[in-house]
Each structure stands twice: as structure tokens, then as C-alpha cells.
Image (cartoon, rainbow over all chains, first blue to last red):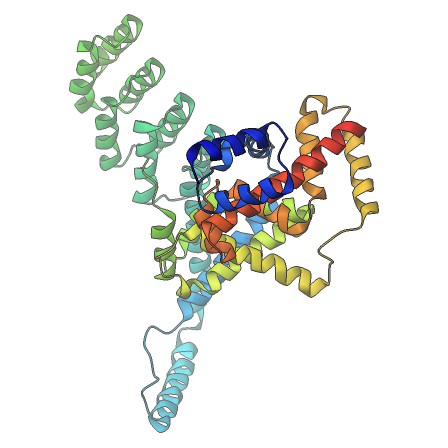
Length: 258
Length: 184
């Protein structure tokens, strides 16, 4: 069909003047990809409105249910055998099962208490893993509030993995929101006993362009008496982008450190 | 922060890294909830159906091949979860007019404090009055961000056929919307 005729057809539809036969033809052209839905003004506007209508949000009940189910699945998954007995004949399989059961009883008899202890520590580890997983998921969120929540979650963790500290450093160095960056710095302060974290904190100074974070970093370096940070702080002093007030503060920090 | 693609995450889940399911859940719990809520209008039920969808994804993770789009696969499962639920509970796909009238009345009570959202409210009511299949196609279009070829994968039809379905659904929505405008 000629483009001009297609345009006429669309125009007529947009004016609300199409008859059923023309609508049928319009449908055929839509199906063939000759007419995009966006050209149908009123329908397109309606479609746009649908996108804008707020979507209801699920409650925290869903999170609880899901993460409980996931933990259960993980437990079951962990129990799955990692090797297959399918190719064995029946007798050796039964024999193997009997040996396993017997050894289970024997081992269980001798190490009953440690086994219980292991179970508790496994569960503790599982809870900790779940918190870590939630934290890493939340850090991906578009909403700054959610990301703040993620950073806050780490304070509930007894121990954090390198994966978590790395995620916190990525946040500190690249998150677009100053409050989220400041919150991650605050949390990392708690782990500054680790030499690796201290080194990463020093490296992080160069990434900071917000005066608030720059000052907070200088204060932290003084608080943890990290003399190796002096060079990185001096780089900030050299930069034209660093505001004068911040430079004053950094100079004071350097003086304390050297 | 560079995010891993849905397919990469799902392949990791398939390989036994179940923690990655949490990331997919965080990405899609809201769109899925919106989809189910748009279809059923019940909060708890919609949450349960989201949960069932993810459980089914976990259960059938070995079937994910990573060739198609994860989101299309997920919505395909979500549709089946919804259909199974209604089949099990013998809920009629089409509701009676009286129910809709009740619903319109219910929304009108809320409109005092939501005047600024009047148009969205009416659109929402109009959506609720659409037949289930038309409501579903518009919800899929919304939550699959108008990727008609993906929706085609979900529904098992061509991209062109999806566009026609969307066109017909929008046509009907327009008519209902206008009727509502007249009586409001």
C-alpha cells in the first residue's frame, strides 16, 4: 500500500472518522509493521497514561516469604548429592548405602555435640549470608533511600565479607548521592582496623568531588591516624576544583597527620 | 555500578548460585506484583502469586537455556501461575457488572483525597472494566516496557499479532474511559 494512503488512513483514524472496514485495514497494517501504534494519537496518549499510573507496591511480607523460601531451597540444594549413583548396579548401591548409614551412626555417636554446634553455626552463617545478599541487592536500587538502607544493613552484620566491603567502596566512589556516599564512609570507618580497608580508603580520596565527603574523609584520616593518606590529601589541595574552605580543612588535617 | 544482565544472573542460579535469585527478585518483585495486582486487585493474593512465580522459577531453573529473554520467560511463568490459581479456585475470568459498579463506588469514596489523580483513577477503573485478556495484554505491555516481540514470546504469537491485540485493547479502553468521563 502506498505511503500516502497509509498516512490518510492514520489521519482519518486520528480524527475519529474511520469506518469498521478501515479499522480492519488499519489492524492489518499494524500487524505487518506498516503502522506503528505511536502514530495513533489518542491511543498512544492513553498508553502513555497507563505507564504513568502508579503501580502498587508489595508489602514486606513478600520479602519475608521469599527470602525464607530461598533459604529453604538453599538448604535443600546444599544437601543434594554432588555425584551420581545411577550407573551402579543395585547390590553395590545397597552396600554403599548400608556403609554410609553405619558410618553415619558411628560418626554421629562420637561427635554428637560438635555436630549440633555445627548446625547452629551453619544457621548463623545462613542468616549472615541472607543479610549480605539483601544488602547487595538493595545497593542496586535506583532509590537513594533503598541504597541507604542497604548501607545501614551492614551495621547489623557481625562480620562482613570482602564482597561487602568492596560493594561499600564501589558505593563510596561512584554513588551519585552524597548521603549514600557519606553513609558508606561511616560504615567503612568501622572496618578501618583492616590494613586493606585503610589502603582502599586512601585510594578512595581521589574519587571524591563532593566537599562534604572530602572533609569527612580528611577527618577520618585524622581519626585513624593514617599518615599514608597525606599524599592523596595533598592532591586534593592541588586541584582547582576543591573549594577553598575544604582546602583549609584538609591543610589542618595534614598538619595533624605529619 | 555495572549490573549483571538478567540472563547472566539466571544462568548463575541455574548453576547453583541461588543467592543470585535474590537479585532477580529485587529487580522484578514490583513489576510482577503490579501485573498480578492489575489482574486480581487483591494485595495478599498478588503477593502470593509473585512468591509462587519465583518458586516456580527456582523449581524449573534447570529448564532456563539463556537463549531467550529472562523477563519474557518470567512473565510466561507468571501467566501460568495466574491461570493455575484461577483454575484451582474456579474464579470466573469475567466479573459481573455489579462488582464493577461496587468498585467504581469504592474508588469514588477515595477520590476526595485523590482529586489530583482523577485521571489516573479513572484510567485504573477503565482498565479494571476491560475483559481479562485485554487487561492482561496492556499490563504485559506496561511491565515489559512495550517490547512486543518479548510479549509475543510470552503469549506464543508474533510481534505483529501482539500489536493488534494492544490496539484492540486500547480501543476498548478508550471507549470505557470516555463512558466514565461522561458519568463522572
